[in-house]
Image (tube, rainbow, N blue to C red; front, side, top):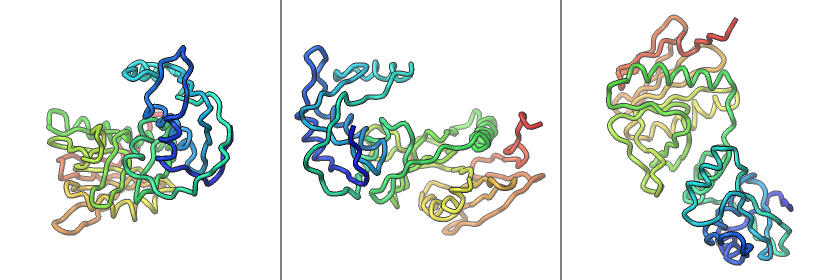
Length: 283
């Protein structure tokens, strides 16, 4: 397998290449689009590299390659089956110029098959770092606290698996916690309807590597969402909640510490600081 750092091939190049790939007779022949998505998986495994594939190579699909076999492939994935791979890869003689821009549609294709989540903005895609146990536990605490208070009301609390899109700026990302009330409004640019555009409350658990971004640029993106009423930033270096609230055409900040209760007026719920940070495993 040949990896070339910093080189990327255009989507048209990969589509054309996919249409030339031959599949063994004993396997069902996948559509050209299916093979193209497999090639994209290899490209996107590391956004700084390109796996070069010749038209002579054979596409091997470990658990089925036929159209209409989506359910079986998903079942295999749940059972721990290997992700789609290419059987043999050798370098091409011609290398395309470096690619700097990815469309939102290409980003969505990546998210369908990627092992990690990515953030999208202005044609650029970044892998999102995995969280620590403490980060995950705090997010779970917030979800539990809000879910209990919102029970029986037309609101739903989502984990970081839900993708949010800021239509005004194009940002696509995965907040740690999202609350939507009423009905879900999907991004028209996502044909699968898996990208939501109308959160009422967003929660981000900060980390040393993301705190500056979450409090600055990312917050400014969130504040462009018309439906958004409150943003909760959960500090990582002390027990502190920062609540940004929409007040007409501007935003205000309230800070809450241990012994205090943060009121989320938009959903008539409270976050007790001590409960957000509660750790029953601590000695």
